Image 1 (tube, rainbow, N blue to C red):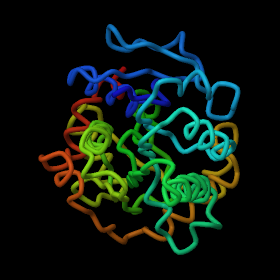
Image 2 (cartoon, helix red, strand yellow):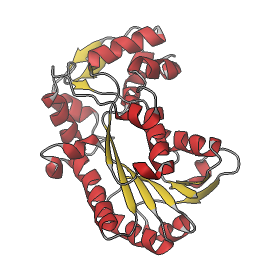
Image 3 (tube, rainbow, N blue to C red):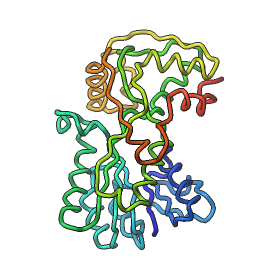
Image 4 (cartoon, rainbow, N blue to C red):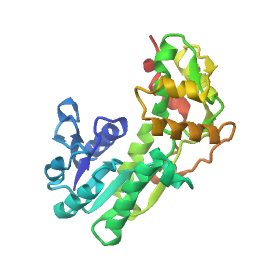
Length: 283
């Protein structure tokens, strides 16, 4: 079996490559900039920009399974090329946002939903099997606070009491490894969460404990936050995030045991993630 891992520069993709390599499974690390990759010894690299169909043929040549990031712009071309290449299984890194009633109107959810539907249609006609991993909030989202914490500044939040279910990137990678290597798990959708619902102030308190760095928050308006991220986040995505945070302000989210069911161990806590990444928050 040969597994193409798209987005190999990402934390989930790189962790998955380590797992595949450790299990002796042939993998190919793909990225828009493969020269920047540092995969384990013996793993080949290939250019695969999911927004450029010209990359798909070479990236998919000889591949049996794919770990796919949700880029909707040319997903139909990717599916078509995967069919020609004889790909048997695609595991999609989707999002729990696709389960919301307004998913089609939500910019973040809609992009993932588009890819899910394209893969589901291909699976329905027997092209290949498709498995959807639907994680909630990535624990790595907390890295957006690292500059403020390193600088002993207040973390500015529009909804400090908004809850999420932060999941460790290693748990997502291990879930992906499980469905890629166990045929009985293929063809389903899996809602992945961390083990606990935490609001932003609770997450910051955990970071303070793990890093030894004091953390404080400053409440700002949604419009102020939106203006502060204009250079980094498209307006439609910023609006989607604000809508999510508002809907979960003071409202715990439901967690699942899916990580444990797939990997055989409980999902890692946010405290474990904070310990693993403590240096990112220190001067």
